Amino acid sequence: MYRINEGSIDLPNDWQDRSINVIGSNISGPGITMTITRDDIPWGMAFAEYVDDQARQAAQALKDFKVVERRELTVNGHEAVEVECRWVAKQGPIHQIITTVQSGQRALVLTASVGGKMSNSQMAEMRRITSTLKLDQAEA
Image 1 (tube, rainbow, N blue to C red):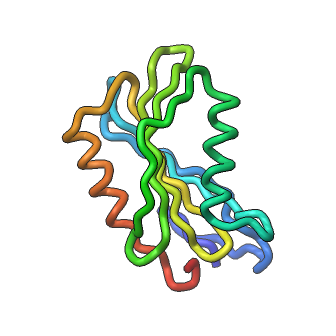
Image 2 (cartoon, rainbow, N blue to C red; image 1 turned 45 degrees about the vertical axis):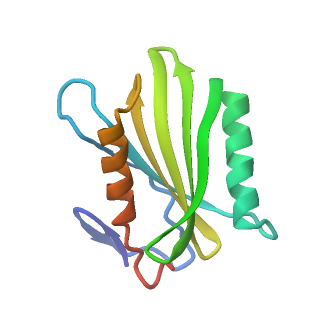
Image 3 (cartoon, one colour; image 1 turned 90 degrees about the vertical axis):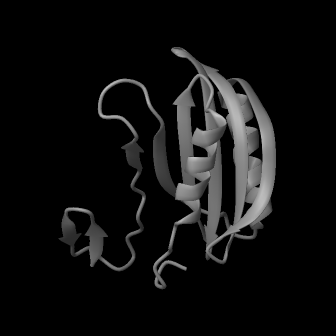
């Protein structure tokens, strides 16, 4: 049984969740958004290598991509890496905090984004929100 906020659907057991959740702080006008994506860590690749590879791909794909800070942490007992970065989109500068959490051979990626620059209190709140992640036992 596959759960979504609105209910559930009976899918074959070998199907994997590839959904992207996008949530935002403001209904109208600019605000912080958070996306939650899921990915498989390639066979034989360590979690840290996966995170480094994703950052390399972002640097190649995004204009003026720059890592401000990278730090290793745990999110409710799961290994995680946080990358604070900036880059330039068509609409202007983007500031992000990308937290990648290891869940077995999968990665759950929580990306907080804002146009311009996040304030210190916004960054603290996004880190607080991310720290509340609790993975279901079946997912871990």
